[in-house]
Image (cartoon, rainbow, N blue to C red; front, side, top):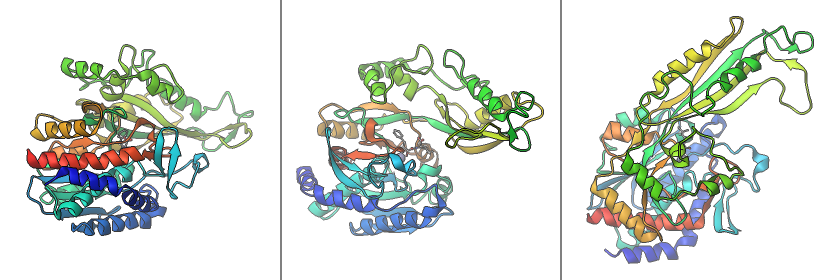
Length: 458
Ligand code: BES
Ligand code: ZN
């Protein structure tokens, strides 16, 4: 079967495939907000219909949360499972968007054409690169080169509460020879990447209560304990002056990078000046003595993602608040144990709370880091296929973000997933004005066609 013909069809169909993606992007599938439940359902329905139009036996599968979409199609080659997520992040702050996030469009920018809208990059655009590659293959050859299972989730951006039970209950159906996940990025515009290390994630909310009501800070200030002061002391103590995280035993299970990997990463010549310069910064802020790539890929973090308390509206109010809270997340690497870290973190915080204040904790997910062994033949096949499509050869890289399903595949169906994606660092995922380069979409489709061809032949 000719790959060239499939690639040519992908090129010729680009306007139509872009329009199909725009249709999916118009559906407001924000998974974390219950107000959008029916929209999540609608996105699942759209995908089921789209897969059925490719001859895939696809169904919307209920869960206690948002539905999964599972589809199967027969083919000769190895059995490939493809995963992507159809849910998106909330759009606020809406005033920072230059267009309605759910009225997506193709825009001309100084760096070429982009598809602008919530989910364009994370992850609807990426998910559709694979579906579209299959569409062109099917149109050209009447069948697909591999047996394929499609697996789309609608809760990835809200911690995937239904995922593990669903995967366990349907483990036989989700078993495959190869797992492909499209939810990551290129290393650089010209350099595609296969992610071999993903960080885990632990989320914790701290809620500190002091006085039993808000107080006048003139009447009570100085004598009454201010929970914001208690909270900020706690938060300021989470790192020492060298950038190390101070939670007891936090670094248990963090391994130094092996020299081979360190050499590979050094050879990537990562330009941290541009990486930080693009977001208006210049000084790496992680642990002293670490390279920027280590800070993002192989070292753990502790970040404060939000703080609440007191009067934050316009103007000024001399209030001594009753309550202060913060959301804190830890990115985890190696064999760090999220549950042990949660316990140690809570004990450390409790130890800093004065006896007339209270602290409560709310957990927000806990996943371990995962490392993908790359010795299976399909990793080399995919690396070759990506290198054929892009100017530079594909790199094996780490990823600072977290995709817990990678570890679930390892544990439940025993497959090391291949994480391949076409997003760029400036896609503004989770932020206002999210975009996906038309070139990412186009090369993404072409890459999947090449990868399917390569793994079918191997
Ligand atoms: N697609 C991202 C993961 C990602 C982020 C890949 C950055 C490459 C670069 C994914 O949808 C995501 O945002 N995951 C969450 C984790 C989840 C448990 C909420 C994350 O990393 O914060
Ligand atoms: Zn994503």
